[in-house]
Image 1 (cartoon, protein in one colour):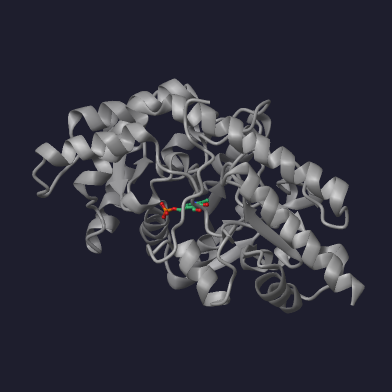
Image 2 (image 1 turned 135 degrees about the horizontal axis):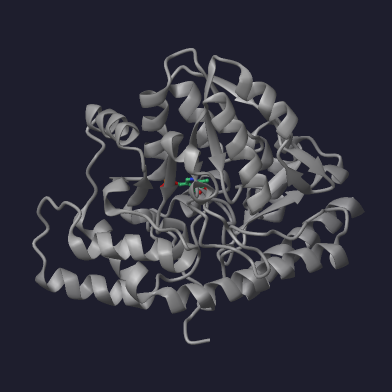
Length: 396
Ligand SMILES: Cc1ncc(COP(=O)(O)O)c(C=O)c1O
């Protein structure tokens, strides 16, 4: 390994959302505990990005900044290089976050009362964006076959055929269940959307984080017809741990759709990002590919560790292998605890800080989502701490 994925970073009192949340839950938590909730990584940022930003700051004037040629080239080339996706610079719109973009898509393509389809359990801001904008959530739950999740195409087609349902918010790869949708699944999904005139926002923010043996297919590449109704959300935020730079790249091929989207961003003045965001993204995409390749090795090692650990040490908790993302969905249902009991136990006794499964939908009740992007030995310690607390509890 040429990069450091082993040093533990202490983010206490730095405003790190995940750490602040942990101290909110349990102010007396032991000093060596690292939270496993919010999806950013407990790794230092790629050195090329940090050194590059320092050099940039020596020269830059931090005034109003708009997308510039070398940034745009970097974004366009990344799609071709990592995803075999040929995009045009003109398709790009920049937002200070993927969730911001989703809010605008909802406002621009639907009216209050319209139905918006989601596949739960799913990243909880999708539902929030729908209810905040006074649209109706139409949940087509994923099918769960012993921990392997698939889309319920029959139920989806029924929902898509309802004229009041206008938009699908799709998560690919899927947070929290870690599926990387196959080309076949995506083709089927695209076909249904085209047939019933559904708009789609495809949130592909996790698209660079794919485990060995799997391949992410960009939804936009599977069906040309769908491109007229498709918004694809990408960002360097998950890939390079740059969420704090609030920089997302949204691709919309259809000119009319793009104009409608931009208009909706402008209405709430959400169409600007900062100079450091552009530069950080450019540096990551042009200089940090080798860092990403090493990160993927570490993430795969960590996900195999979690899978094997529970199988061996505590098989009542199920941890199916993930195909992508760095979040792992854990099935605690066999423990027979209510969500409240589980939460209290994890926070106060096990010092094991997760995202509770029920926040992703009622289908997540009895589950927990953990973040596996941290040094392997720290992850192992956290798992051991959990199992020790579970055994202590059982012995009472
Ligand atoms: C599916 C998904 N979309 C979007 C985001 C975050 O988007 P942003 O921080 O760019 O708003 C996350 C973060 O975990 C996510 O999992």
